[in-house]
Amino acid sequence: MPLMDTAELIRRCVARDNGAWERFVRTYEGLIIRSVRYKLKKSGMSVLSDEFRDIVQEVFLSIWEGNSLSSVRDIACLEHWLILTAMNKTSNYCKKKIYSDPGKFLSFEEDMSSEGEGLTLSSIMTSKSSSAFTMAEDMEMKEILKKEIDRLGYKQQLALKLSLYDCKKQKEIAGIMNVPKNTVSTMIRRAKLHVRDGVEKYFERKTGEGVSLNIGA
Image 1 (cartoon, one colour):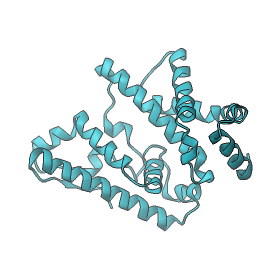
Image 2 (cartoon, helix red, strand yellow; image 1 turned 90 degrees about the vertical axis):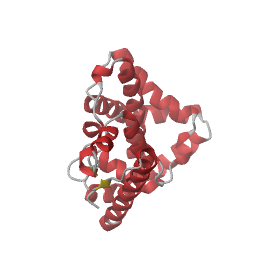
Image 3 (cartoon, helix red, strand yellow; image 1 turned 60 degrees about the vertical axis):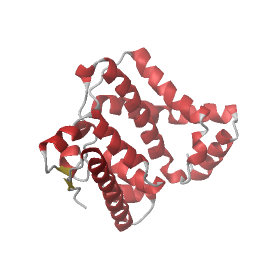
C-alpha cells in the first residue's frame, strides 16, 4: 500500500471510521499473525488455535480501543510498530501463562537474544557479587530491564527493540527508520547506556552493592 494511502487510512482509523478500520485489519492481519506466531515460538509456548486467535484479536482490540494509531509519527515504521505491538501483547500473554505454569518459564536471556547486537542478561552483566547476580536472575530484575527500555524515547526504543526483538542489523534498522546507519548506532548505544545506568541505580538502591555492566557500547 502506498505511503499516502496508508497515511489516509490511519487518519481515518484515528477518526474512528469503522470502514477504514475493517480495511486496516484486513491489510495487516497477516503481519500480526506472523508476529504473534514468531513471539510464541521464541517464548517456547504452545497454545490452542482458539487461544492464538484470541491473542491476535487482542492486539487489534488494544490498538482500536486505545486509539493507538494516533501515536504513529512515521508511517514508514508502521509495520515494525505493529510487529512490536503484537510481540508485546504476546509477551504479556506468555507471562500470564508462566505465572500459572512456572515450568514453561523462558529465561530473559533467551527471550531477548539477538544476533551480535542484543541485550541479553549475560551480555550486559558482570556481577561483583554472587548475591547481585542471583537477584539479576529473578523476575524483578527482568521487570527492571523492561521498565528501563520502556522509558526510552520513541526512536531510541524503536531502534533498540528492532535490534532486540526483531533481530535486525543496524543497516536494516537504518533502512526501516530512514536514517543513516551511524545515527542508528548512536541511538542504540545511548539506549543501552540508559538501560545500564538504570540497572546500576537499581542495584545500588536494592542491595547497596555495586555492579559493573558491560553492554558493548
